[in-house]
Amino acid sequence: MRFLTKVTIVVAATLFSTQLFALPKHDPVPGGVAVIPVPLSTSAAHFNSRPVMLLKQGGEQYAIVGISLKTNPGDYPLELIHDRTGPTDQRQSNLNVAVGTKEYRVQRLTIANKRKVNPYKEDMDRIIRERNEMNKAFKSFDKLAQPATAFELPTEGPISSPFGLKRILNDQPRNPHSGLDIAAPTGTDIRAPAAGRVTAVGNYFFNGNTVLLDHGQGLISMYCHMSKTKVAIGDVLASGDLIGKVGQTGRVTGPHLHWSVSLNNARVNPNLFITETP
Ligand code: ZN
Image 1 (tube, rainbow, N blue to C red):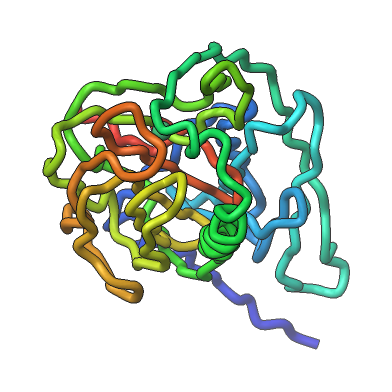
Image 2 (cartoon, protein in one colour):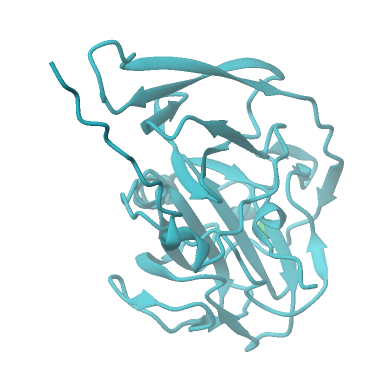
């Protein structure tokens, strides 16, 4: 019996060599991102029951895992599903994500509008409805093959409040700061930091005039406290397109952009996605 020798020519993955995919920075801590190499056979991954982004770069594949601020340091499973290419292939396997410790500073703020710290009973229906609307957008997993993971800063100005601060508002403990604040005068342009689709636009109780962008594979960004929004749900934006203008709507101490970045429904440090300019 004769076998034909099959010569397999491995063709370089031109799809990935022609375009540079910037991976986010690996910072496996609460509020950070874990960049975990996974086998090329991996077709899906889950962390904390949420689908996880998979990126191919330089002939390798990586799971890009968002770690929520509420995560305790320790070991957590990353569940992988593999494409079946032969009868002995394993269909599922686990990798470990080791989450380290990170201490965030405490920030005390005084909010003049006390109702924004202790809402009235009649505000609660609105707050819950808006939270559900935002959560739905944050939980989206658009199976885009090529998500936009290299971000530019959405507006210009000093960082007035970094990501992750433990917050005490009017002497009362509140949720940690789940984004970063860029201070800028009212009316300053806010631009899309990367390509994305507008999935929510609202005037929310705490966040004021707000836009959410879906960048694909569970990577979502949010822009808050705007004086004006300039987009509508369904708009497809390129990097640099105008989203709205800086303002001080919602719960604020002054005009600024609050910018949140979320990955597999975990709010993470936006700085990890900012591309370094050489
Ligand atoms: Zn903020």
